[in-house]
Structures are given as C-alpha cells and as structure tokens.
Length: 290
Image 1 (cartoon, rainbow, N blue to C red):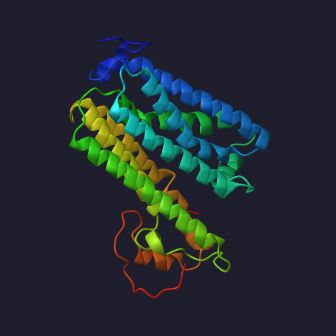
Image 2: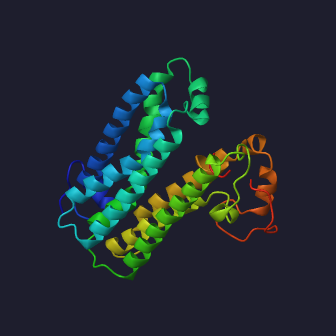
Image 3: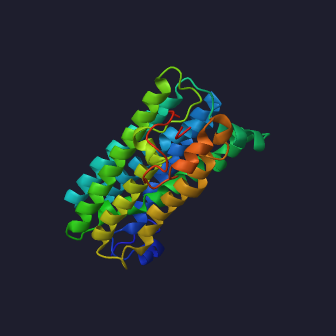
C-alpha cells in the first residue's frame, strides 16, 4: 500500500483505502487555500460572514480532490460527485442570494466585537481556518465514498437516496421560507407552513439526511462497519454542528425576542426531526432559519 505524502500514520488508521494520507492531506490543503482566499476578500469587504457561502464549496473542492487522487474511481464516485455538486452549488447560491446587499451577519458581528482589536487578523484562525478544518473532518465520508473499491450494493442505493432526499428537503424548506419572507405583511411573523409545520428547522433536518446518506455510501465503499468506523466522524460532527453549535441552539438563542409568537410555535412544533403539529390546523402564519 502506498503511503502518500506523510500518509503512513493516516493509512494506519484507514487501512481499507488506497493512498489515504496523500489524498486527505491534499484535500485539507485545498480547503485551507480556499479559506485563505475567502479571508482576503472578507478583509476588503469587512464581512467575514461570506465564509458561510464558501463552506459547501470547500467540501466540493475536497470531494473533487479525493476523486482525482483515487485510482479508478467508478460509478459510486460519479453518483457521489453528482450529488455533492448539486448540494454545494445550491447551498452556496442560496446563501449568497439571501445575504446579497445585507450587512455582516449578526452572529459574526458579535464575534468581531468580542475579538477586537485586530479581528481582521484573528479571523484567519477564529473563522476561516476553523471552517476549513471542520469541512475537512466532515469530508471524510466523501473521501471513503469516492475512493473505496468495494462493489456497489444496497447500502449505496439507500445512502444515495437518503442524501438526495435531504437535498430536496432543504431546497423545498429554503424556497418556502424565502417565499414567505417575500410576502408583504409577514415581517416579524413566524413561518409555520409547509415543511415548517412539522419541524422548526426542516432545512437543517435535510442537511442531516445528506450527511448520514453519504456515510451509508462510505460504509458500503469501505466494506463494512469496522472498516468505516473512522468515517463516522463525518455525520456525527455535522449532527453536532446542526443541533448544538451553529444550528438550532444558536439560531433559537434570541429568536423569541425578535419573532412574536415563536414561543407558541416552539410548544407546538418539533425542533428538528419532523413530527405532527401539536395544535390545530387553523393558526396564524407565523421563522424558521433567521
């Protein structure tokens, strides 16, 4: 087995895949380079929240790097790359469209104020390098998916369908929320229609499905649970980010103060996993992702 650039130790952890170390390190370098380029733009714009639009592109760049390094990447890699291209470009375009002409996101304004003076320099590691490293860790399942040599099976089909369903769910949720916000008279009201009737964060639930779907593909590509144990980092980390770090918890920290009726929405609607509403069908419209 080839070790690749500094890959001996990494190959020891991932014995079922070829040249693990070189490809994974190359992926990390590509993501850090993209993060650094984005940081340069953020300094000129005085807006670090642009990193959110680049997050998915880091993962796309990593997946392409892994595929180029994989010997004889076949049908599985093609399906995974097709889905990650759709996922990454759609999410990046949505975030750019949503934030066009808007000031820096209030979450990043808080981080900026807390780390003055010199935040422009500190943001290199506080925001951009951190995002790149997190993206690299999440990309482990993509690496396994495009590099594994095991024959395709039912787990691949299940994983690809789950990932595709997740992309569809988050796309529909974003479209529904965008349409609701665009309607006059809905400013400050709570979106509880469509998918938002069954989950307060259906877009994040869709994202959750995407990464557990890719993990199922990685599981098949690596040849079993024991071989793919390290790749479990990918969906677990994404789940942690969505549920406890930058997703549900952060967004709902002060949202009840900004959205009248949100406490009632919380009482009636599951936070993450979709479920039936706990109140009647007739209710005033009322956000989801702020």
